[in-house]
Image 1 (tube, one colour):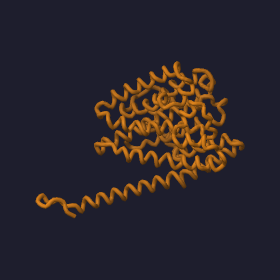
Image 2: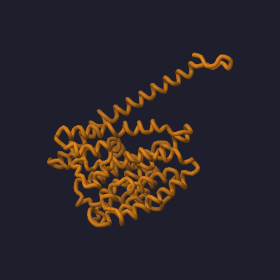
Image 3: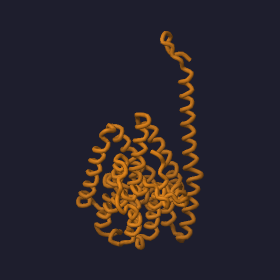
Length: 329
């Protein structure tokens, strides 16, 4: 799969929605719709990369997949958690975040303070751990029907869970958020459909997030999630057409540091400082996270793997096999 820059622009739209919600959830009561947009995007990107690797090499390197994702997520998370421990945050709040079970800690009523938002990262990590295993055991010719069936089942379970499970479970748990993730996975294996008025999906997401009906109270915050997933799926299909405005340089730069923005903005927004100060500190921390932690570690890992591959290739070139004598160097 070639890189689609507009998907990074769409990621910026999602982070903007989430940040706006955390800044003022009365003004932007449905800004949390940025989360299902992230999930749909994640499902699509990860599944597309898995398909591309299998098409290219005939197999999926599970250890390599897990290593890349851990390198991408864990160092930045560790820095945030260590920083909060250093300023007196209780270990009981840090442990679920760093253990990637913050979403289920929330369903049990555990207060996570300035790490509350890490429930999202926990869901993503669970998806990263499980989905490659599923893709590995499904033959490629069965991807569309099997993933389609899983997606329908996940959507049905979310609808059932709204009636039989607690609101906290529906909102936070991995099994109910699997619906949005699997929609993205399904889009990755079914190709791109032409959807009328698709260009209006992003304005619709941004406009509807101001409606209180989809906000913090009542069942519509949960049922509205289906509308959010549907609009996110259409927005993804629209982004795949590479609209120029989603490839704007500013949007792409924000997307580059979006994980740092996500991790740090809640820390500062929930601190006893002014909103302007929180914004400045968030930008500074996100840039520092990218330039001092995320990117250097990713480059180091890529170089390490390149050296390992080069050494392996060199070894193979130096091995000559004589049918009579066998391998020799």
